[in-house]
Length: 330
Image (cartoon, rainbow, N blue to C red; front, side, top):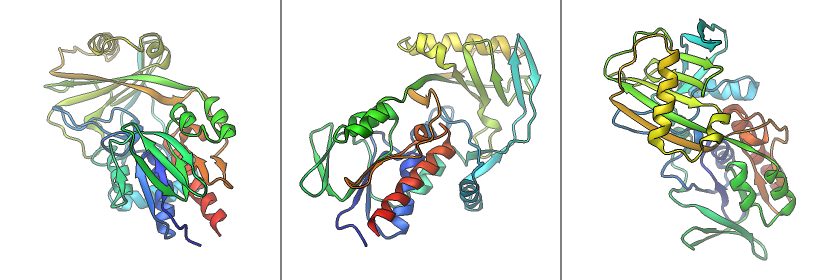
């Protein structure tokens, strides 16, 4: 049975688009909304004078068979490629090689290529921040930050970070309460570009005992622009919490200093730098809800915070939300 009205999906990250694809394939009309100018959420990339930069998710892994199969389809279509970096660990003041056999995947030629391809030609409202989700006598309606109304919709899927979902789920208190219980950690991300390649074998590094948590050589990823030596640094959640309101220039200075101390070679001043603050970078702890749902009311919530906190968890959660919605329609 097909719904009489479209299904609204708020958020065009991996979770929202996973749900949208399954519903669209089943013949149900969807309308997507996102407060940003493009899709991806934390899987998005930023265009800059130094080329496209993956400031959010650096790579993703696939362990669940369903997601493994999807990633192989993405690979066959050229949306993703395997990234095999020279991995290191920095601990107790020492850099050491950190090889492992974990397959790491990245969007190609940038992380946002995945969600752009998943979105395809589906109808979407970008730069549209939904502030309220409310139910009329029979259907759902949305209101955005400009005061515009959208609807009616037969069902709503909220695919945003938990703090934003809490507000959007306010008409269903039991779901809002569950979302409100999820704490999400922030992360400062800094990008640096150098005119000449740094004399370091490091292409990815897990960092300990430092303001930094992770760093990656962006040009080592498949399909990336190599005219500059670009690096992305992620601060720890703890350091970010302590400096969450620090001016971007100061964040760059601090994290550049930490980077120069550990990378093991001479580091000139960068020819380009920028900082980006992810307020909701990752859930502080994992949950195994899969999704939140009130099937009788026709509202669902999904996202990485409902599962593992990883891109795989986001995809699985969105897929489960759509599957449950479809089962209710039958």
